[in-house]
Image (cartoon, rainbow, N blue to C red; front, side, top):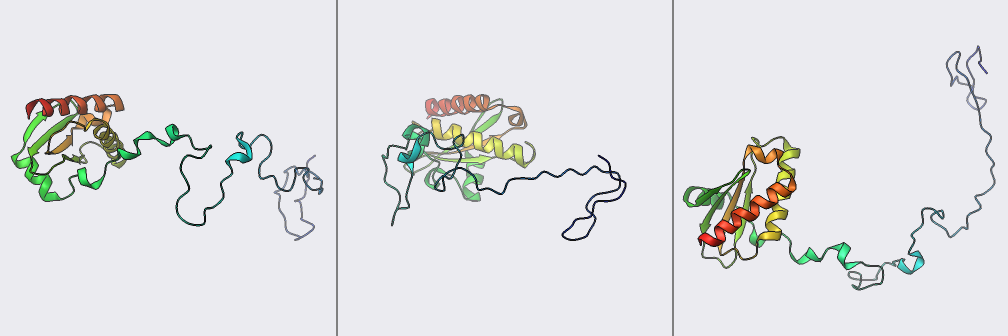
Length: 192
């Protein structure tokens, strides 16, 4: 049905439709929804585990571990294998000294520079310059390198290690960067 005059709202008296537009109204029931008042979700959207996984706020401290609803494997067994500050190179002076005095191994996507230290654990640093790409690309490369180092750092002697991303790292996939980190770290383990 087409109107030749604009539709005027009975409540405000203002025009809400342009000339020639069709206007259809649906009349909805004002009866309350038939779902129980305690239900937060409809049947299709509710948690299949049911109320047994409902978590109440604990009065103090973190929630207890080992509840029935926590799948430890999905939370990640790698929580103890993070990339903590103790294994990171953070100061510019450390990066500069490693790059000036260290030994280099070159790969397709990365350059690894290392320098023996007197510390008890190896420290790792990443250099991903703007030559690699825009910020999205650089951050993806850094995330991939951090994960590769986190998984493959065991057995590395007490060294300061800097990974320098080359331009080709922007086009590398996760597995390519991961494998190259492994190969370069193996060369370092065999060299020292």
